[in-house]
Each structure stands twice: as structure tokens, then as C-alpha cells.
View 1 (cartoon, rainbow, N blue to C red):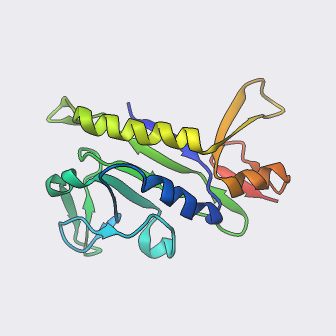
View 2 (view 1 turned 180 degrees about the horizontal axis):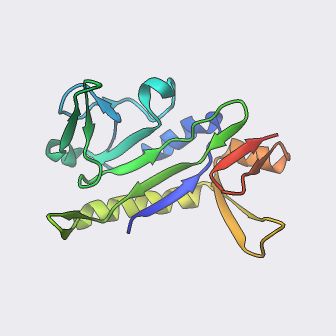
Amino acid sequence: MGRQINFFLHPDDQKDFDDLLRTFDNICFLSYYNKTNKPTIIADTIIREQIVEGSRVYLARKQDLKNLNFTFIEKFNYWLIDDSSNPLLHFDRCVSNDNYINSGRLYFQPKYVKNLQWVNQSDDFVKWSDKIISNVKKKLKKYKYKYETSSYEYTAYLGNQAMQLLIENKAEISLTGDRLILK
């Protein structure tokens, strides 16, 4: 089972979040789409052209770059990193439009299946990824909320600007918890 954190970042929160990610040792950012079977290192995680870039980028340790496996997608003439077995922290970025902000996510698998057998990722990679997720939870703002139809209390993690939208009653979290809907 994977480990993850879901969160909301307003476009104005992206730079602060990128700066936070840069504080972790040996980190580099990888593009989702690659022109060759070598990783495309990108300068940052900030969304500029979501349709061209895709919403996902990867966080990797520099020492793991040489061992990444790729799959060629002939129809589109690009390479994708095999994200099920490689030591990667997936970063699904918070894509927004005029009406909402989709939740983002940091996610990784501490083990994967190969030849019908479970294979563990390295302990160092798992510790590194757990540390990033743990620190992101500490740095983002926590927002506790309930829906009128439920007695269960939910917790959302948000960047400063996304939290401000909730505080000022300019947004609400969707019933499915995956969107920050702007009012």
C-alpha cells in the first residue's frame, strides 16, 4: 500500500511549496514526459503550461537517476518513466482554473510487484520519501471540517493562499474532497 498526502495549493502557493521541496537532500525534479529514455530534469515544480507539461512531475534522489526504467509511447513519440517500480515520489500538482483548484498529492509505493512477487524499495528511499511527506504535513496549514450530512471530521492540508480562501469564505471543499471550489 502506498503512502501519501493530499493537499490544496493556490497558484500563489506554488513557489513556497517548490522552495520547501528544495530543502530536502539530493532532490531533483523530473518531467512526466521525456524525449529520450533518460530522465528530463526540470528546474522547478511550478505549473506554467499544464497541457504541455502534464500535471504530474516526479521527485527523485540524484543517485537513483541512472537506474530509472522507461517505456516508449510510439503513438505520441515520448518516453514515460515506469512509475510503479522506480524509486520516485509522485507529485500530482494542484491544477486550477477559474472555478476550482484540484487537490495535489505526494505519493510513493514502498514496495511493488515484479514477476508476481513483492519487491521492497530501498530503505533509504523509503525514509527519504517518508521524511518529505512528514515535513510537508507539518508545513502546510491544517483545516478541519465537517459536512452537514456526516458526523465525521475531515482534515485538509493547504498552502497559505488556499487557506485564506477558506477563511474568507471564498471557497469550499467539495463533497468528494478532491476540489477546492471557488465561490
